Amino acid sequence: MCFCVFFLQVGYQTFISQCSLNGDGLVAVLRLLRLCFCRMIIFYIHVVRVLRLCRNAATRRENMADLRPRSHNNKRSRQRVCSLTGGVLQLTDLDDFITPSQECVKPVKVEKKQGKSVAKIQIEDDGSYVQVNQDGGKQKLEKAKITLNDCLACSGCITSAESVLITQQSHEELFKVLRNNKDNATEQKVVVVSVSPQSRASLAASYDLSSSEAGRRLTSFFKGLGVHHVFDTSYSRTFSLLESQREFVERFQRKEQDSKCLPMLTSACPGWICYAEKTHGEFVLPYISTTRSPQQMMGSLVKGYYAEQQGISPRQIYHVAVMPCFDKKLEASRSDFYLETAETREVDCVITSGEVQKMLEEKNVSLNDVEPAPLDTMFSSVSGDDFLNHAGSGSGGYLHHVFTYAAKQLFGEEVKELTYKTLRNKDFQEVTLEKDGKVLLCFASTYGFRNIQNLVQKLKRGKSPYDFVEVMACPSGCLNGGGQVKPRPGQNPKELLQKVEALYKSERPLSPEDDAQVAELYQIWLGSVGEERARELLHTQYHTVEKMTNGLAMKW
Figure 1 (cartoon, rainbow, N blue to C red):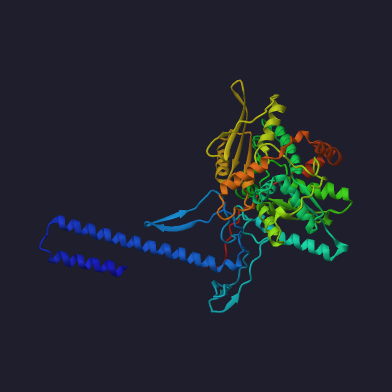
Figure 2 (cartoon, rainbow, N blue to C red):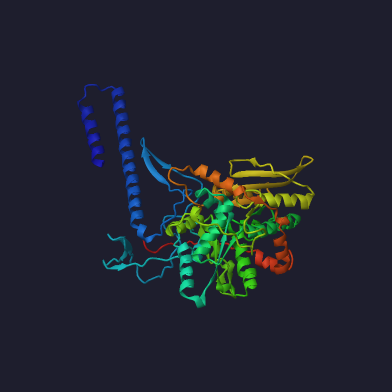
């Protein structure tokens, strides 16, 4: 390229010396042409460099494919794709979901060695990694393994459940436990599966069944594999809603004494919790509700009340949760939900709706062909032939139930229907309670990381008008979770989501306050509402994850 520029300059000087026209106009034109041509050459050089970098990055990703766990096919977490169209470099197919990096960025503990020698990492033809020293010697490197607890304690990325190697949180692990039960009758585990209503609706949409019919057939399928009991997490969600209602009223009543009581932010979404702990830490954590999510509420019920009723140790129970979200695997692995005395987790394994579909496929079974069976009623307020739901959003209805409860308890207002006002987009909505022109309560629902970031910035500027916010990391909420069943080839994702929403809302709603069995269990198991035992078993805490600043000692 330098030679071309030099040749152009020489040609320009020769042309001027031989040209009979010596006017300033011709000289100016030729200078302009030279300038334009030089800039074109520089632009071309930059484009070549960018393309070369893209090619090298693609090659590196291909070489690392064997060392990385395969990411689930999650359309809500799309790759950034580079394309060169019309001479313009563009980033395409972006959305607001913050995906994990191609490689885990958790810093490696570096052992300092004497001397100033520098080693390099080289990728061999077979895809293996070797350390090349200055003397030319090579040493093969072992693959790093990262546990879920490492992932939770790392501030390198925001949500990383879909790219972390998860061996204890998969349907293969469930199959392994069931096989062990058959092979070793003397040391059997009592296997309990808790199914979320969002997962039930997703599988129902995939197999063209009603939500309740899908639930009964799932019960039959799991019991055919050797599962002992199948429960519905709508029951545990009733506890979450009741505790959230009471917690909000308590916060609202002491807001004058504590500036960080409000807004109360929901805690059911583990992706949002990871983001808050790793990114905003001490600033945002006081605002987050301490009430457990329905998954972990069910974990407390199964390893606590159910174990007591069965007269067995919590360690003898293998508890599986079927959820619409991969991040629920991380939630189950939190140290806060580990029973030290029993040496067991409250939820041993989390599988997604998509993984249940994979289980069906691996067994060559269609859910349509499975004979229905009644739901187990240990944790159900109705007969085994019926399923219940809660009014409000597909993410649990926290805004709906807390709003109606607070309006009645704090202001004596009976709210029958909520009027939602869409703000920036459909994933950011607002509900207010007004009387005599005065706003008494202001609630919002915020879905997707783009809206979450806007919410946090408002909090930091002290400009948030809200008393309560239902926060979910996934756009459109839990019904659109990354673990839900994927659309079939040619199927419109939006139409599938609408179908899932319709099936989810088709089940009969029940107000948490009207659930007599839950009220009875409060008295039998927890003493009463607000007791220390209830706070211990139905609430949790959060932890700031410190930033890690040390880097890798080796260079690539």
